[in-house]
Image (cartoon, rainbow, N blue to C red; front, side, top):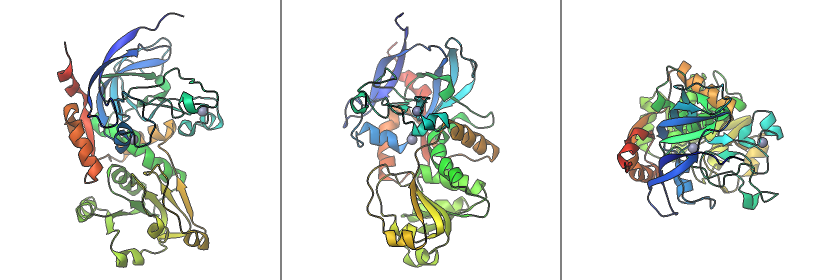
Length: 370
Ligand SMILES: [Zn+2]
Ligand SMILES: [Zn+2]
């Protein structure tokens, strides 16, 4: 086999769990059959980037170049590629490959891939690394993948989404993760016009969840812990409730058709189960860790459901991009330079950011040695 030709890439990487992100020169394989090379224009800052960089899920492969809310321009096609053309604006979300053979993949749910290594994450390698795979192997041949905090990325064309013409690239970026993660469960549980939808947490995911549910015609209520975010909700024309407001919480008892928890860490969901109607679902998308116990009396007495959902499949990700373009909605964003990413991480961690930071990747040119 011919050795792959490598291309130079420059990214921002963490070398270990307590390191700041610093420039890292590395190489990527040139676009192979059905792959495309993309010049990264913008990359959103997702809370999971921070979890991953700090090894909070105990699975980080270093050096870690995060970033899975990528929008860029196609600069080169590998042999045989037909889905995109040079010059196209495309997006890459959390996944860059899946096994393509398992039941979920065959049904289009690549994000629930049950192949030996599950799906290949845009950064940090396969979801199930070789050490944990049943056969001890890695079908993707790469233990680490480098994400969108970089100037260039190469992915299979099937895993690149089309950015609608009337969506600004910097606004489209966070839709690739935050948009897909919230749109997918709203669609799966059939949220429709007139439904009462509760959104728990009002950060980057909550912002998208509230806007999408509203555009679907639902009556949306967001639940937050700060008066500042309550005011933000009002500004957006969305009803807000303080979680600590016992009286308001009581009044909403048994009134919601669907609830989505977007809080990025473990929290008590029992007060929200009380707010669900009979036969309704509370879905958790933010926290990916053990949660405190659920009071099953509240669940069983009214046949309620507590569920989870992970990002979105490729079709849903394309759909939510198109949906946002059609309804003229998108995340509230603040554009930053890559050199300021550590400060952005700190603010996101403190939880006082409702908007999404989006990195203007042109800023990385300043770190080029030549
Ligand atoms: Zn994300
Ligand atoms: Zn699969």
